[in-house]
Image (cartoon, rainbow, N blue to C red; front, side):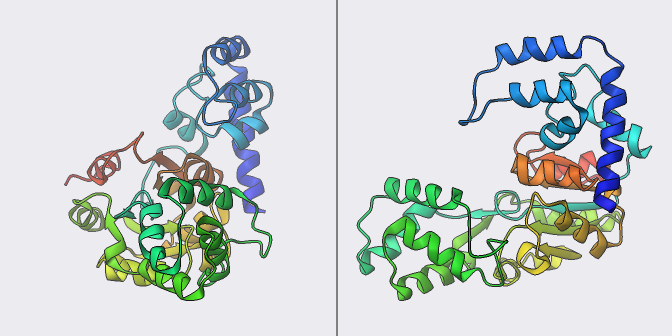
Length: 301
């Protein structure tokens, strides 16, 4: 019920903003003709045209992509129209791709460890097969990451490499629980997070991951930076489902509108967080370091 109420509020506010400008549709049509197709999708043009025609679609599909093109105020002003003055009492952080990243390319590790188990595919072949397998619907359960995620990852590894040897899988699976497999994306993260916490801002990790995430962050000695963790395998919701963001806010004791989420995936992190009522910044685009994140929430480092 809370999510439906938020969506209704978003829809009504965006409808009012769209109706303020009479040439929105014309702007979208001009824009859509000038934007090429991107990443095998219809680029921004289909979402833009849909947003101009239907505020509900604007909320569910565009979420922050089309506001400037619509001729309305920027996204911060849009949030002020919903929630009043913007406050950031909590910072939610995505794990893989934002907080941490693999130290070596996945396909390289799959091949290196797999050679003694008979894996013969090249790294390019492994990568392509991995992508195809990962994009397929996972039919064994509603969530990909259930508890330790072993059934899902066994499927991914065997599909990627053609090797179903359980000993190979276990060696590979355990490798990705060690600090050797990962590194921090921002070497200044600890200093920045310490300053953010000192300023009274609460911190949480929000991640689509299995139950290895907590021991992994412990191995990297960064788990204590955070007040809470919302891990999809533990909360039974995967981004972009807004429930995982709402759970993180509940754990921190803050309202969603008082939290900002930072992540590297537009669909999972940005659209999902905004659907929950949180602010959201795209890592690598809106912000490029945690120092920049701190500055945007008013914390000096």
